[in-house]
Length: 212
Image 1: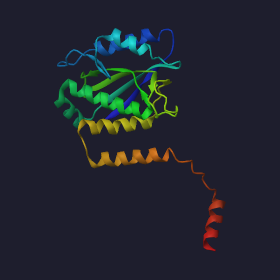
Image 2 (image 1 turned 90 degrees about the horizontal axis):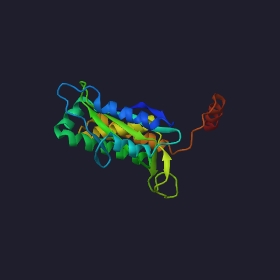
Image 3 (image 1 turned 30 degrees about the vertical axis):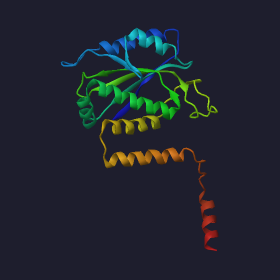
């Protein structure tokens, strides 16, 4: 699975109109020969229409970033398992990935998504609002929940989401386990103080001291 940022829209007076146009494009971009009509969905189920989606997301624009554009693209073996579950399976998979991503950020994310099957590799497009509410005890806010904070993604967040997406598709192999272990190790190192590198002279003095 690949999780990719397709950019973001800076906050501006025209951001709402630009988002509406982007969602419309995602819905009505030319479909594949056998691709059904596209629907919008979010964390809590199907979204009635693009106007309802834009209304909710625009209430959570950040001062710097209005919204992010993300792509979830499963690998072939993952896609086959998702296809076997049907439309609902794809949507639940997306919700699980995004819920885990939000938990890692310590925020409740506001997003809307739709599936594209107009290429050889079906994928999910998402629009994620620039603000999310803090989750209690997860963001250094003394356990306070519901405070609005900017949503910022890092490459580490996307790598972790890729592991979750592969796991939730039902694909498990040794490479997955190794990748998860690396992620956990990196997460642990992130909480350790930085290691100050020694100069060659300091290393020499240390070695001399050990030999005495």
